[in-house]
Amino acid sequence: MNKTRRNFIGGRWKASSSRGTYISRNPADTSDILGRFPESSPSDIDLAVRAARGALPDWKLVPPPAKGLLLMRAAALLEREKESLARLMTREMGKVLKEARGDVQEAIDMAHYTAGEGRRLFGKTSTSELRHKFVMSVRRAVGVCGLITPWNFPVAIPSWKSFPALLCGNTVILKPSEDSPACAQRFVEILEEAGFPAGTVNLVFGGAQTGAALVRHPDIDLISFTGSSEAGRDAAAHCGAALKRCSLEMGGKNAQIVMDDADFELALEGALWGAFGTTGQRCTATSRLLVHQKIHDRFLQELVRRARRLKVAPGLRAGAEMGPLVNAQQLERVTRYVQIGRSEGARLVCGGRRPSASALRKGFFFEPTVFSDVHPSMRIMQEEIFGPVVCVMKVRSFEHAVTVLNGTRYGLSSSIYTRDVNRAMEAVRDLEAGITYVNGPTIGAEVHMPFGGIKQTGNGHREAGEAGLDIFSEWKSVYIDFSGRLQKAQIDTGS
Image (cartoon, rainbow, N blue to C red):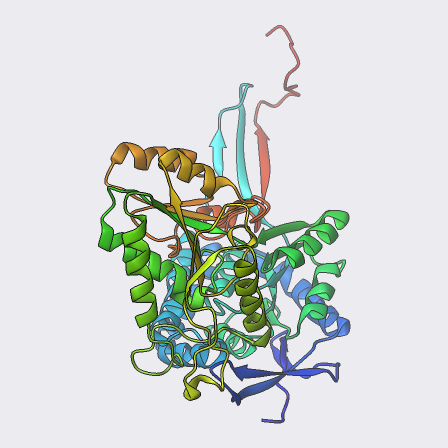
């Protein structure tokens, strides 16, 4: 276990030039160590960039359908390794096993979807304003892409970024979170086995400094980042100064509206899953419940009753419904926000502390937590907590709910439960978010649909679906003149 894992650069597993290392631990039992990983240096980043740059000319010429076949192989290997990879994921970052299986399945789905796009990497043809002239547009690769991914979806999100990037003809350098390096290593091993050429896929381990070196490298053409708003702003600033492409997917403060005509049981199930799935550690997690005043008290009472019954346990344990927070820093953060909520005058209805069971003291567990008597201006209603904490607010009307939901700096996911189709359509129109669910919770993306948000959630780009190809490709316009003479567009020649 003392042996430090290696980066994957240019088709080979190479030791880092840095002596710095970090350890990946099981957040459910910190005595369980998964491995030691390098804090990669700028020279490691430089090696990876040179390998990716060297592989780029040949990789761009591989036909997209052939790239799709490699993705199909990756899908088959991910399917073969689904259970072992899911178990590794649960052990490394804590989510319960059924959710970890879903994470891997999302990567499998993304591989299948993106492989299909290999025969659908469509450009466009159009009409010309001149005779004997043909015009069209085609997609071209951007170049070398730096992919910075979080720990909460340690297989799915790397697949969201790497598969479309590779299909479009780019080469990639993956820098995973230091809280999920073993999952990233296994993911890249699968891509290596699938047959991606040397240099097309590279992996460098490390923390914030490694990520910063990747962002700042002058020969990186694009940064695709998922993580905190603070780190995302820094990445955007450097990319802007260097005039390189940058895609950001950052925070959320997502709300679920529950109207008085909602299917009560369905809305309750959605609230529990949205708030406490992945221990609330999703950018799409439901952190605000806006419940109509006619059903508020009953809904709150039942929500609390069921939240208290959720089985908090290590994710590999049978029947576990909510695992630990990912690390000590996240545990401290959630604990601090509970204190902030109480100091602001919110009523702590349940949870708000570490479980008392001695069997859980080895990990970073936290009870499902519910606040009521909250006001929209409170910090716990405005700031992303990224833990199993949900605020329940009473609203007077649909219009009141929309105003509260829209009143944050984030705009990722939103939800409404109602039987009124007219009101549902108004919500689709009026809720300020990149995603709106009707009669479903705020979590649960599908790979063929664009994913991303507005306002300070991101910078306008989308991942997944056909829209996910846009950041990883450049549009090139092509004009073919077969008139045999000089034709001048926009010049009136009198003909």
